[in-house]
Length: 550
Image (cartoon, rainbow, N blue to C red; front, side, top):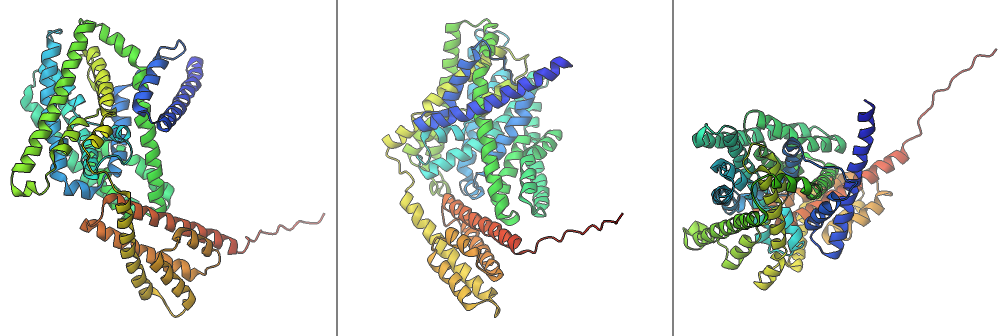
């Protein structure tokens, strides 16, 4: 009992130290322009060989239930539902078609290459490893290529692929693991399990998301709303998994829909709090996994050494698997590009050029999902330790390859996002919102509202003069009518922007920038109004206690 009690503070100290190390290393890497994932892996590897560093081993259940749902949900919240719907066929081509094709190509290549050294290697084990290597990591692509340094369409395709292909690959992985655990079940049952996982995941995601929206619509306090948001990936994943559906697919669907519907059921304060909290959670989990994988390298190498695969032979096998992975991606993307360019007219309208196809093929960076998913393999998998080491090496190789994404975009002279064009779109969108705000002002004003107040609001909406600063300074001396009318105007501005989003007339980044501005203004106004109301309220009356004489 005393040993357990003394071990707990030590574990907490190591956890806190690890989190601080993640923050320090990531901040330093960003400052000097290095790849944070690669630096964290290198730091983890170096720390693993220090004599005082404890042995680290990730529990597959912790990865499966604790880490991946939160990472997928955080990424899904930032994914545009309209982008997915508009480019749905392109994204599905990459996130479903390419993943399944990669699973087969990598799986058979792994079974053949590893089978030359390990006679017990099976097709099911190879397909499981193919499912582990199939999904790309959109976060790593963005970090390696540089923020805003990808063409907008290319960026949205890679982000959509990086989110949805996780769910596809993990469903395929679970199916392959079932085949490993029950080798006599046959692939017919595996395909049936795959279909059940997809349908169950979609059904559970739709039903649970509907319930969550209804619950959160009734919550007014940002703390309560954010608490429900933090629990949502697990509330969605666990029931879906219980009915043998894909909990990962359910989490992705919930995240995309809740992110899209947030302005209709959340307050501005809740939206700001949710964005900040999930960005923090995603940052810590994403980067902590890279550090933990580096820390596990000694154990991974030791497990790989137990197999009958020598160093040179192992290096050749890993190189062969990596080549199969890269070739599979290039082959599928180039074939899809040809279909879009020379296929039916409906596809030709949404085609991309060969330069874009080459960058999409090149930007196949693997990341956290691959590093975490490899620990889900059952220990009875043939060449278990070697496959873990192979996944580690292949992720590092793909991260190094990803370093060339930005230079490749510049070499091929693909058009990058134009900041001036974005500013023009923002000005145009704000003008539309201002028109809606003025119309609402004229509808809601009453005879009791001072004319100078209404005129000031009208001029502020027309000229958009530093609304955030001007409003907050003026709030302390404005009457209640100001807050009432200004908040009504903000509501109309927000509705006008959401209508423009539904019509697809602006880039999603522009829509999010303007909506975020409105949330900040509304939050500042409400806080200022509450402070003023508290100052104006009479002091509480304290009860007088009468003392008895004598």
